[in-house]
Length: 252
Image (cartoon, rainbow, N blue to C red; front, top):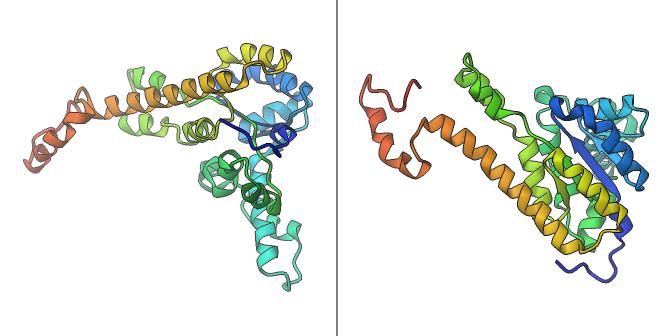
């Protein structure tokens, strides 16, 4: 993917982290290494707290969202006599639905989906948003929940991650550096140490990994819900719902 000649690669020195609990033991060291390479650190919820507790400077995603909304409001209504801090304080700080909406908000997804074009960069700058160059995420362990003997439809659906796959897809589509597996962290750090050789190929492979992991992840959810019926065969199974008392699939 060709970068426009006027592109300043220093704009990409922003890294976002959102990793599940089981991956957090390695997060402080990874965040430290990324910070040492000159990146600004951003994170969501527990990942933000984990990085902060390691003594590293990090901005929580909720601050980005409230700040961006406040700036947009002030630009639209400059005569109300309000300031950014007052407006931001009146909002929920990304806590709606127990923080579920933070990483899939328009403001945050724009930091990943923005193109390397002046019009997109201007949109980000007007809202005080960074251009995210690295997205490092892991997903809720859906497969482990399904494997539990006492799992239920409700518990499995609760463990279906939305934010993580959404960010991974966005980063892969936008050709950012995207990491969806902690096993890839060391090789990524080595690549940075070596001054990013073969950058386009490296990013292609990271994007391919991200799309593949997301596909497998949602494939797991689909197979669980269909209980052995391939998704291509579901249309033929739907009429069975019309017969009272006839189970459609398995124990569901």
